[in-house]
Image (cartoon, rainbow, N blue to C red; front, side):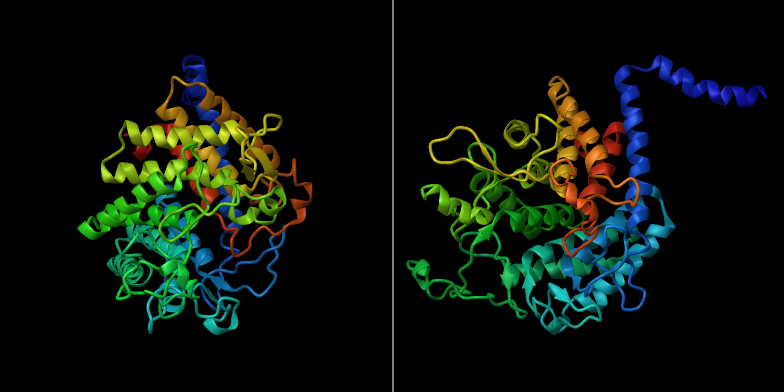
Length: 458
């Protein structure tokens, strides 16, 4: 009886003696851990596994009923491999490792193109590349996520075959996707690695005609670039070869100096030689017609603030300059894209010519953006504890996610916050592009930070 009483006294004593901040941290840890296990991972696994054809089913209704063609997109499949591998390590779980084994087998045996190399962008459910919208095409973005996921699986299992496949993928990108003149990577490739479409030859004037891939002209883009940075960061940690470091440094420099603007947001699309593609000097009507390719993407900006710090840390260059750049990106997001009423960050904004303030162009609060904001805000709070504003915003962001994004009844997260998009209550819970990597990483990272166990804070 005395022993039982003692067990009840310890938690009470802890809450009486610890600071208000530590009490709040423990509450957040408990909430996030429960949400991560019960409302996220349990919602996705094992129900999304395709036991018939391998890999994972992609399309599910709001109440987790499978629907649609269930194509196997490389982004979907690799994100499942990454999440299940990281979950297995985080929880020490054989159950999640079995899911990771299942994911790896499909990626290695079916999604990889044995004849031409690289990972197919999309396969049919049965594994055929010719019956989908993408056909047999490849993209650097999807191959970047393959590297990211394969390294996670290697970290979990020590499987050297997985690491070798990650290296092969990197070298395939080096051969076909890397731009030897201006640096960076072309995203859209045919099955054999050649350009998906030839560009305007006028843009090639002045370049040597014997340049490998002379006919290839393509826009560079921030989204491909930041996820290559993300993948290269992880591969460099386990394979610190000179070329690997060179490409990681290259992507870090290009993003920092060419893609991040002076104000602290990303240019979405750029020419081959890294000149911004913008419609800012056009009429408002033209800008609005082309808003998809020229806007401020608050979610990508705040995510990149985190990814740049990860890369700087891996390179041993997490100095004041690196911290200042990431801080600028997070600050710009919360100062120009934050909803002061309900919390959360908006989807898109724009600086019209002559304006010093941002006009919100699209006000939904997309699930992945809110997850990345949660992660970045807590990281800033830990890195700059003297600036209380980050903890305040983090608190508001977690409250926003609990109130408007997590489906506490069906599990999973809504596609957009229900405050601005109430109809999303019945939108699909899973699609090719809507998986669980962003929100798993955010919650996992936040739990680690709140426990004082996070690599970037060492």
